[in-house]
Amino acid sequence: MAERNSCAWEACGSVKRSQVLKRSGSICGGALVLPGLIDGHTHPEAVAKGRWFVQLPDFDDPHELLAWVRQYCEAHPIDELPYFYGESYPSTLFDEKGPRKEWLDEYVSDRPVKLMDFSDHSCWLNSKAMELMELTVDNTDPKFYDRDENGLTGRVFEPLLLSDDEAKLYKNLGWYPPEKITEGMMEPFLSALSDWGVTALMDGFTEGEESMKFFYDMDQAGKLKLYYRGTYLLNDYSELDEAISACKRWQETYASEHVGIHTIKFFLDQTNEMGNSALLGPHVKSSGKPDRGVMNMTLEQMTDCLIRLNEAGLDFHIHVVGDRGFRTACDAYEAAKTQVEETGKDWKIYMELAHCELVHPDDRKRPAELGIIINWTCHWAGGFFGEASREYLGKDRFDSMYDFTEMIESGAIMTYSSDVTGVSEEHRANPFFGMEISATRVDLDEPFDPERYPGSVRPPASAKIGIEELIRGYTRYGAIPLRLADKIGTLEEGKKANLVVLEQDVFNVPLKEIHEILPSKVMFDGEFIR
Image 1 (cartoon, rainbow, N blue to C red):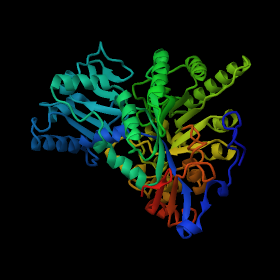
Image 2: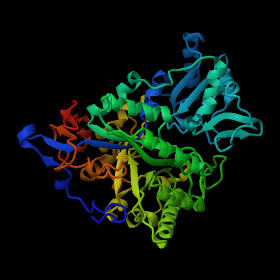
Image 3: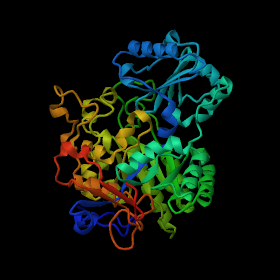
Image 4: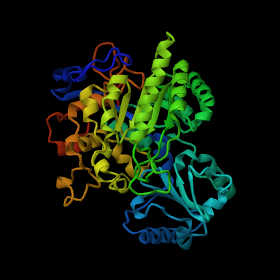
C-alpha cells in the first residue's frame, strides 16, 4: 500500500494490521480487541426526531401505497394525527417526472401529508401541506421545488434542508411534533451505537444550534458515551461568511471533553437515483434537470471557499455523488492549496468527500496524490438503493459505481460510515452490518435479483473491500477528520482507553457472518459501558 499523502496527515503513513489492533489474552481471555469504532458520517438528530413518523410498508405499486396511507388516516382521525409524515417510499415507483400532489390529494386531502423517499433526498407533498407551508412558484427555489407548466408539482428535493417551510406548516396547523430533541428520543440510537462498539461519530450536518447544545449538555452531565463532532451546514456559497462566523461561535460555546465542531458541510450535487447528480457526460434519461445534473457551487466558488476555510481553520465535508462533482472538488482543492502555499502560508485543513458513488478512472488516484479524505457509506455497497440510478446513468456507469479499490491501493485515506437518517434504517448503522455488505457487495435487506446478478452481488464484484481495510477506516483513519487521532483510533500508550472486545475474530469468520458479530464488551474512556 502506498504512503498516505504527508501534507494532510504526517503521522499516518501506511498501516499494518498489527498497528491497528492488538490481541489481549490477559484481560479478555484471548478475545479480539479493537479500538472503539468510529462512524464518520451519520445523522443522530434525524433518527431521534423521526420516531413519530409513520413507517411505510414496502410497496411495488403506487396505488397500493396511497391506499395504505388513506386507510391509516381513516384509522387515525385528524385530532389524533393532524399531520401524516410517512417514511420511506421507493422512488422507483415513479418515472422521471416523479409523483404529483394531485395523486395524493385523491386519497388524502383533509390533512397535510408528506411522504419521504428512501434516500431522504426527495419528498412528496399533498396540496394541503403545500398550502400550510405557504408555497408558491414565486416564493420557492426551483432547485428544491419541482414545477411544470401548471405550477408546483408537490415533489421537493433535499427536504431536510428546508425546515423553515416545515415550521410554517406547524404554525398554521396549530400543532407541533416533538421537534426538540430529548434524551428519551436520542437514547435508543445512542444505546444501539454503544452496543455495536461505536465510540465516536461525525454528524452529517448538525441540525441547528439546539442540537449542538444538546450534545454539549449531555456531555457536561456525564451522560454522553461517545465523541461527537458536529458539522455546520452551508446552504449556499453566498452564505459562507455567516457559516464561518456561526461555526466559530459554536466552536467556542460548545467545546467540551467529548464534543466539538471544526467542520463546514456542503451539498455539492444531489443524487444519482433522481437523475440530478453532477456528471461528466449526460444522463441517459432526462429528469427534467440539466443533462449533466446539478452543481451547487462553481469551481471558482469552491476554490475561494476552500481558501477562506483554510484561513478560518475549518475543515470541509462535502456531499458529492457524480463524477463531475468529484472532479470539480479535486480541482478546487488542488487550486486552493497551490494558491495558499504560493503565498508562503500553510495549508492546514482537511477536505473530506462523502459518498463519491461515481468516480471517473482518471480521478481515482487523485485523493492519495492531493491528500483528500474519502468517506464511504459501507451498507450501500450491495445495492441498498436498488437500480433507480441505472435508468439515469446507463449500464456501464452503473456497473462501475461504488468502486474504491484503486483509491485504496494508491494510498488514499478512507473513512467509513452509516449515513442513516431515519428509524426505518436505524439498524443499518451497525458497523459490522456495513462491513459485511462492503466485503461481499450483497445487501442484507434488499439483495439484487439473483437471476440477473450472480449471487446477488452488485457489480463490479471486484470492488469488494477487505476486512483489514474496513477496520482501518472504522478506527485509525476514522479519527483523522474528527481531529481526534491523538486520542483515539488505535490501541497504544498515551491514548484514551476506547476499545471493543469481540469473541469472534472478524478477520477470520465467514464474510456472511460478519453482520452477526456483537461486541461482548465496549469500553469508553476506561469505563466499560457494555
